[in-house]
Length: 227
Image (cartoon, rainbow, N blue to C red; front, side):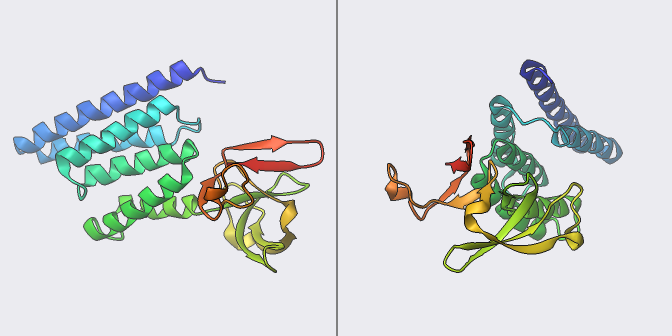
């Protein structure tokens, strides 16, 4: 198990590297060295990919750092900049990993549309944004009593039945998945899943609003999700 201090220092080091690479790229572009600028661009992509491939949950401090990078790119380059869109994708990943899934989905929806318009549908950033949007829109649930993961699709019979697709394995093979109609009381959303609030008592004003599952309470006979 990694120490958070070590992980955070590694993340901060990579963010610092990206900042320096971008300064170098701007300098090379300024003096007309397009080849050198392109090589630095490759280094930026490599460091970014390394950060994104980290399978650890991103710490709150690291999410804040990525948000600052995104905001700085907006101020310097505007919303339509390739750098802004790229850093926005990284920030959306951080939000998703921190279980702020509603915000992550809204951001990636905006970025995917923007990237398609600015960079084109076949650009690697657009393709990545669309892939992330598909991931962020997934409503992951567990079907009791097994631990397998499914995708919730819709409710039927006034909410008594939930239609799910799966089981989901990694890497995902959608063509091998099947549809199941499961009694709703056997369905439990995983942490981070977007849900509609209902039957809230102490915060009844939130009933009918979007929410996110933040933790799961286990009991001897059941599992209940909390917002």
